[in-house]
Image 1 (spheres, rainbow, N blue to C red):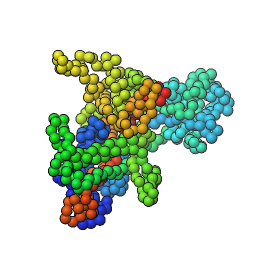
Image 2: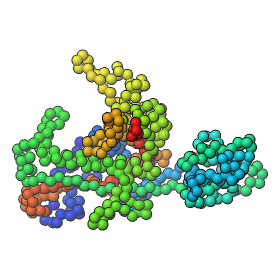
Image 3: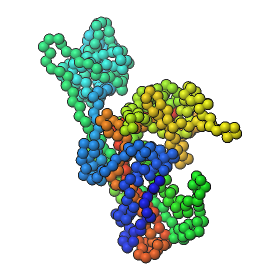
Image 4: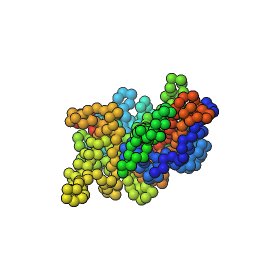
Length: 484
């Protein structure tokens, strides 16, 4: 596939600045969403599949404002977020450490139809509504027709137990910090009821900040001449044909490195911009270092699913149930699963052990040329197509890692699951965004002759990528417990 058109251009007769590099660099708008496909099986599996599926922005420009995107500035894009019609609330502790207070019956709240207070993390629940607790049986009626009272850490509600037996009371274990509850119905008096339960939901806007990354390679004039004329270094493609010299090889290595850096920022990137838009991270010169969030850190973060040992069917079923799966442009409901070697190997072992894969289907060839292939491009369950791909960074020798008691590296069990479908509003659930195209260029010296940018006998080649990612879908993270 085409990486870049033509040959790198030189910066001549002017001081080397970021502006001059960008001005003279090759500017190819379609590169970012496609170039990473070249390294998709190793350095950039998620970028590659997003590019292949067409999940990238097109035509964004500074000042743009539509119902799909607002370009605030050259490094900041806003995108619409559909508000949920229903929401869960959570129990929180008040300033005294209590999630509920029952003056009449301290250990039997709600007994004999006595009202008591509960503390929740939001004021989403309204007067006269009924809250279902996480046992899916116990229901609390919001007894007071006044607005919930804001207190330290949350909101106080006065409630009664919904029951037909005065001796019933609420199991206090259902009201521990973090326990969930949900609004399920509203109850009113039969005659002369005065008002109704009112809720307002607004579609919001999310923020995607661009992360700018650069890498470069330098080569002396002598080395470049040796590499070009004498081909003293060569490497071969899969068919054994010589295709490049040493300089070209290093150029490709530079692209591989920026692809790996880009993929890391796309997945694990930690944003440096506060809610008020101020950049928190600065370098020693006091300049802003802006970075956007990767998919694991956007919104409320990823949903976590620990593996106690190997993959199990129960793990898989729990994850499939929670995947925010919607069909994509091709009508398929898909999610890509990126994992380290141990994660993918354990997943495949689970599939074999549970009869999803048979030995006969894996054998290719005949006689002494027979072989067994245990890799599959996808598995499909309940209408959801799961695409497993190994992300080699999880196993990279350069990645910090812990060792588990069985001798495997903890990081090799890591995995993430990214749904690829559209949102209910028809928007891309996950997409790459960029306002400035990827740029690649050269700064040359006396080695090129003529007017020089520098007097050095050599040149440097630069790659600059400024990009971000939008994640509207729920992202799931799989990992193995440290004590497994």
